[in-house]
Length: 315
Image 1 (spheres, rainbow, N blue to C red):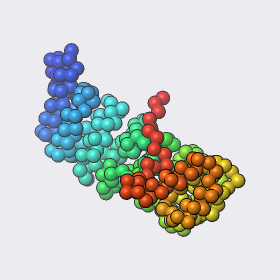
Image 2 (image 1 turned 135 degrees about the vertical axis):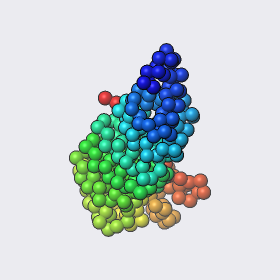
Image 3 (image 1 turned 60 degrees about the vertical axis):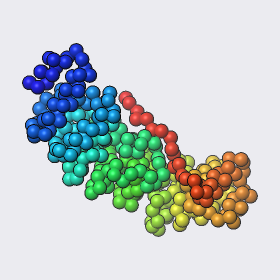
Image 4 (image 1 turned 135 degrees about the horizontal axis):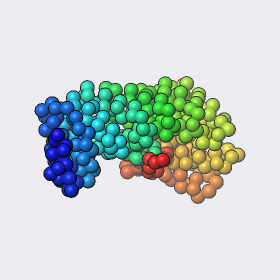
């Protein structure tokens, strides 16, 4: 009835109809009335997508006054506007425990793989692979963040698995989902395998070091490059990479010098001087300068082994 009344009064004005729908949803939450008309949710979310600044306040108010209603609301949102992932993530960020984890599960178990992929892509700020630990931990539930990642890493869609591993890496939870990432190093999808191997670069145990060294002998070039990047990052692995240079394969040398420049743990002058004698071209030499700046300059920083912007693919 409420939706019919709003539609009757403002049906020709989508903006005004949406604004009244937002007010109605806030009132329904405050009075514990069920969100029994999904049209109100659809109109309200459409309005919030066009009013990004004001839309931040809506999930904030809902999470504060009626956090127990957030799963119900998000179910309606995903049923009617599953592509409204920016609103969904914004709402999740503001939902307190213990209500947040059930809401996250609604998203990572949604039947539409694009919804699941978009969720993890947004958590990763739409970058393919950010430096480890550079994402705010609050992007996932404080108590069940690793459980959310486990669902993602076990997703039937490889693109979702890839994005979930990237979030675990960027958010600093690789150790928490170590078993799942180890399993993913044998994933049927090549990109997932490579992301899992790169993620092992933040660990320090002998088993993962041995696995990475073994993958240096893989016939798949992408896996070898991923193992190089992971070992270069590790204090217990970078010497393995240095000892193998120069390699007769030019692409191997390119990958090794790129990893030294972008991710390797700090090297001393003796190691850098030796590398300078075997640097085959200007690019390799520039990677040595990149390493010096990144590891020694006060403003030096890592941009990540793959900082490209990620766009969710639509069918």
